[in-house]
Length: 253
Image (cartoon, rainbow, N blue to C red; front, side, top):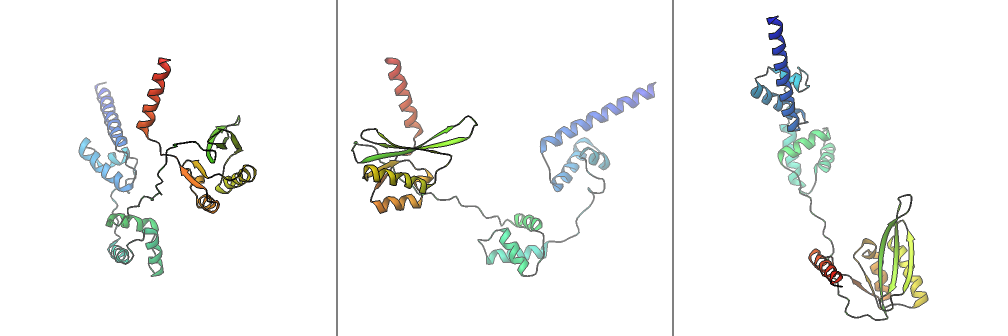
């Protein structure tokens, strides 16, 4: 009876240690083979596990852990560095193509690993956007129009867009076009109909959307000699202050 109790206590202790070690490994979130091997070594040192027991906890084959790669990457590393110096703007994919042309057959994943180990990663530059300064609406004139999009959804949850064109002086709605998407050429066709029916405006006020900042739309405005006035970009502080002032006026009323 005592031997059976001792055996059960030892079994519970081993299971508790295995659970504790597994919980500690899950928090590390290691997925690569090299990280798993390093984790096995750490488990052996922290919990005094044998190699077989640590591999069992990590779900690693007993023959995988002691294996050490005998292949050397020195020659490939040297060729990659020399090629990267010749083509400093090329990434690892283009370098892989150039190495293939020179007769070096290598897996792209292996090349990417060496590429990162050497430290040849190219920092991606952020795309520069054209900055357009908006102009405040100082006075209303009969020759100015405003253009904007409104988003909504139908019963089947499909999103739609509504293109609205209004007269900035009389607030008369000149056009309402509904579709799931609008290209810049579709916008200019709508404006062509308004110009034919109501005459050509001197200026059109709009936001900085992609349809209204495309080359086609800008070229159409230049060809028609229509001034394109972009609104001022949103300012969180100004928007928040205006909301607070509006709420205060409503409460006072």
